[in-house]
Image (cartoon, rainbow, N blue to C red; front, side, top):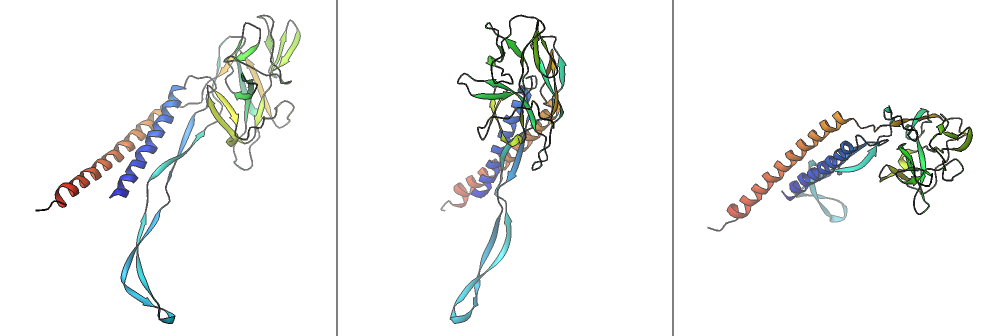
Length: 278
């Protein structure tokens, strides 16, 4: 009976984590460049149950071994194994702001091991000098004239901060910024060939699991993309599907909850009635 309690509890915990993931997706439905998560729920390893028999089987040297009969397998519950980001391209919307840019993927190599496309990202510099990556193209020019993403400097192909002097500048499809006819810098775009190496840090930022810097996509003949000024990439969250999955998770949670309550009542009866001395 206790094993049944653990199984039902494991189901409730996995569905609770799934609801938290779906809630986060829905909350970020309007976050620029946000990539939604999906969950992978797995079952714990099954156990093979055997019943010991009273009969014994004689073997050589006068030894005997007890026999057993197979009862069957027992599943010990489920758990949420991992969250899997979905790196598909989000819809592109026009904003009319000069500093807004959308990274539009055209040709991106497919990883031979995972059979999934790689990902293009903008590099930004953190306060401690570390490099992080983002798909949020809602850039702004701060009071010092530095092009930033949520207050973090966007890096050029030379690995430097991008300095813009005035309010009249253009960004070409290659990411080249020109001001008064003069080239200022080129916005760098980095490439990750194995998306399993990307780890979400929050606020639209990613880091690499191996802590290695991503290579630039500039000059890579296998990659084609364009940078669209005055446009933004929206999140790729399917709101209707996430709401439907959330209702399914709620139903599964309630079903496990009722099983848990049934076990609790059975144990209460066993303790208070069956085990009572008369």
